[in-house]
Image (cartoon, rainbow, N blue to C red; front, side, top):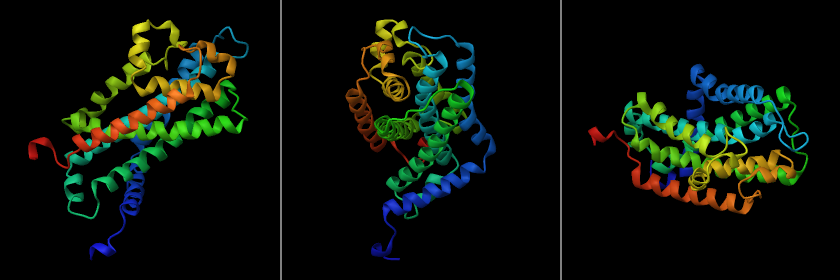
Length: 271
């Protein structure tokens, strides 16, 4: 096969994404954990903290339903990506792929296809819990759904790329989940996902959280699913969607640079 007849990188990446999806759906344990764990947390938090804020009709369950979409995206995109690449590197999948037309870019595209599909399913599960268990109303304004669209896309890309970069820090696939879960859980509390309003946190914690994408993801999704009167519960007293887009775009760039600098096809000890 000549270079001219080789499939394009995008086409190869999409085909690789289909393979990744088939492999994932065959693992029932991974499916259950990925789809139901964030939804279970939402069910627990929404039930335990069932009171209302000072805003009529704004219950804690509604706030958690919006905020925890950010947690679902991070846990599915970042952790699934990092663990998957660590496993592929350890079992020799990456080493074998290096001798095929699958370039690093095509491999990344395939993984992003996987996490995008899984994250979309996870968001549907979270919204289903919010709507059918806690009677959370869905937006009827097309503008809010447009915001949801670009926010979802930027969040998945940023978290996915950071997951690729973080996989270089994992020494073993067996410890990947524990290593990658630690910063994820810490950021959820710092970013006001599990604690809201975020103004309950010390100012220095809010400042630290503002550096990372999770705080802005949660704030953006609250702007989509909460009434405008809830904006007073935010640290800056505004939804700041322009800043949300800017921060997430910057993290997409940072994630891409880290991927290019840190990605390796083989385990370090075998290099």
